[in-house]
Amino acid sequence: MQVSLESTSNIERRMTIGVPAEQVEQEVEKRLKEAAKSVRLNGFRPGKVPLKVVRKRFGQGVRQEVLGEVMRNSYIEAIQQEDVQPAGQPRFEPKTVEEGKDFEFVAVFEVMPDLEVGDLSKISVEKPVSEVQDKDIKKMIDNLRRQQATYKEVKRKAKKKDVMTIDFQGTIDGEPFEGGSGEDQQITLGEGQMIPGFEDQLVGAKTGEEHTLDVTFPEDYQNKELAGKQAQFKVTVKKVEEPQLPALEKEFFEQFGVEAETEEEFREEVRKNMERELKNGINNRVKQQVIDGLLEVTDVEVPQSMVDQEIDRMKQEAVQQFGGQMDASQLPSELFQDQAVRRIKTGLIFQQMVKDNELEPDPEKVDERIRDIASTYQDPDEVIEYYNNNPEQKQQIESAVLEDQVVDHVLDQAKVKEKKYKYEDAVQPPNQSAG
Image (cartoon, rainbow, N blue to C red; front, top):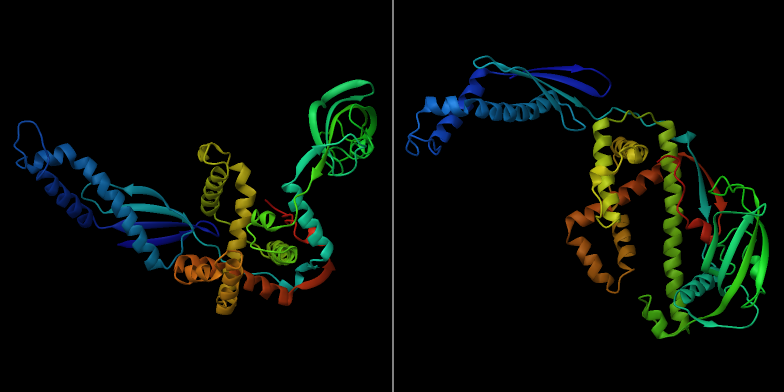
């Protein structure tokens, strides 16, 4: 087999492969003889069809089948011989296919890019500093109680946290506008469901009353035609309901999967969960900034074949999120392009850093990660045993730990500045600069 390799760009290769005619013809002949043993043709007994008849009838199809396999097998052998690492599937271009002549074809493919990670000292990271305070726990428990609340109609003046049922009609300069009216709309006063100022003006209102509210749409309102405009809303209060919060007792705790006998035990379990969420939130914010920094300081040329594969994966993820109620092929690839490129670049940089710094998953950190996951289940020991006895599942944990070690390596050299965050801000998902 003869092989010549040409670089047509930084990441594209054009490989010409020549296969001796004898190798192709022997395989074609072998398959035709096998076919002759079982082929059925009118006028001949099974297994007695002459080889020349079989060759005339099936020769071309068998030859095309053999050439396809020869291209695939020869390509695999050639990339091993030339020590190249393809980034995706090749495109085959047959050149010489005449019977009796050496078979020659071209394989066009992309290779994994060579990259050099940039200067890590140029990366700046703002590391949140936060802690779970008693008021955060109280707010969380209040929210959990409100999720399970029942509601009782009251005749008193409405106050914050009450649920109000209203009809409303909005106008701008005396004219109604699209989306400005509603009937039997339920709002929780003080929750910010309506535009600023709307709910505040209804505090103190009672069932049966009508009120005229003067409000101004925010400058950044999603409907640009309404942004910054003053409006009036005529509101009829149809009902005011007061939330009846459940008692902090065992029955309530069990609804959240918590085995606690007392309020104090429940509060401690909530604290643990919040601290776990806070730790993850801070780590995610830091990791996001590290990725942003690495992408800024490192040039990566991404093979389109890898991007296409990632887009296909993301489409399948999207279909699963919507319960499989759509065809992935109907989703526009452009929707996923930027995020797919970001994912590929990030993965390539992380792989390079693992290689450059000879990083391996720290067994202690792997065990710690498994224990953290296990602590959220009723039987932690069973979960730990599951991961330790399932290599594929444990490998996923090891990969995640290895990513964290890459992040730690960057932080050791980057400019890191600490900043105090409230709990509720620190646990919010970070904004991505791309995708």
